[in-house]
Amino acid sequence: MAQALHIAMVAPPWYDVPPRTYGGIEAVTAALVHGLRARGHRVTVIGAGREVDLRTYDEPPSARIGEPFPEVVHAAEAARLLRGLDVDVVHDHSLAGPLTAAGRLVPTVVTCHNDVSGELGDYYRSLGADVSLVAISASQRAAAPGLNWVGRVHNAVDVAAWPFLERKDDWVLWLGRLSPDKGAHLAIEAARAAGRRILLVGRRAERAEHAYFRERVEPLLGPDAEYLGEADGPLKNELFSRARCLVLPLLWDEPFGMVMIEAMACGTPVVALRRGAVPEIVADGVTGYVRDTPDELPAAIEAVAALDPHVVRDRVARHFDVPVMVEGYERVYRGIVAATPAASRRPLPLGR
Image (cartoon, rainbow, N blue to C red; front, top):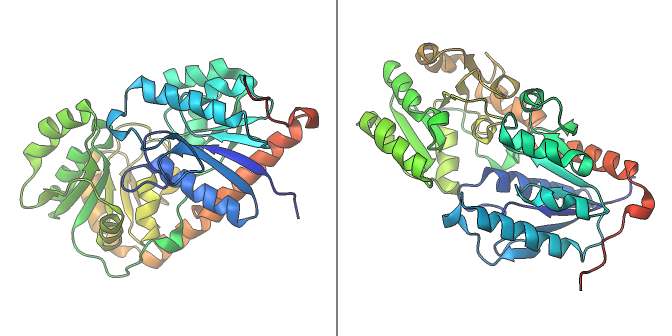
């Protein structure tokens, strides 16, 4: 059996790990930590809130998301805490944290959770070999081929933890952040054209999200299109398991899309536009339908009745369950550690 590793896992500062409601990166991080520990690795989690091992904030500064200082303070605190740890590898999921990688002797792995085709790609490019980047989809990696990629590991969910229902209700679901790129207004129009009621669940935190909801989504609401607010865990479970399908008319190249595998883990198919990682996640005609234009979505919403919920869930279990993700990261860690000189794999001395 391969030797166990000690991994420092740096979460973003904005939400608890695991998150109480919204927090896709935090949910993936928590699942990865649990899976690694189950395989015998030692994992020290650095983040905000009361569930982590080492805290940068006693309470996550969720109300300040989008501001620069919580991210910077979090990175500085995490770097200070890391100086006192004897680890084999640092795995950083935060934005500013990778800036401190050059000051460490142990290797730093960074999962790229967002779009890397623009300024974020420029940022990672400037860090060069100080960080080893992991893509969450082949689509994301292809968008920035010149970065220091060391692998691709799809995100995952604990499939067994999601409720499965074979018999679905007749309404459809849209769930996500209320950003224009997520296409909630198109989901309403598609459901209405299909003659189906739609329930919408989403977070409105930033100014642009409030403006989008007020200008593009709220005018479309009515008896057949209801906004339920932000969902907690139990409500998400109920909605994902009961919905006829999840409708996701993305208007940007989503690097992954956790809501798709969460819905399919419940046996609920996904109807989505062909953007970003969608074709990697949704098997067209098997676990949902991938279409090129919004005009094609209503027919796809009707066609999901022919799909088998058992097959939908089974494919997620084979490709997007937590053990699959954990094995992927184990390969990345061991490859990076093996390439790092043994004399360098020690913590930096504590600062005075």
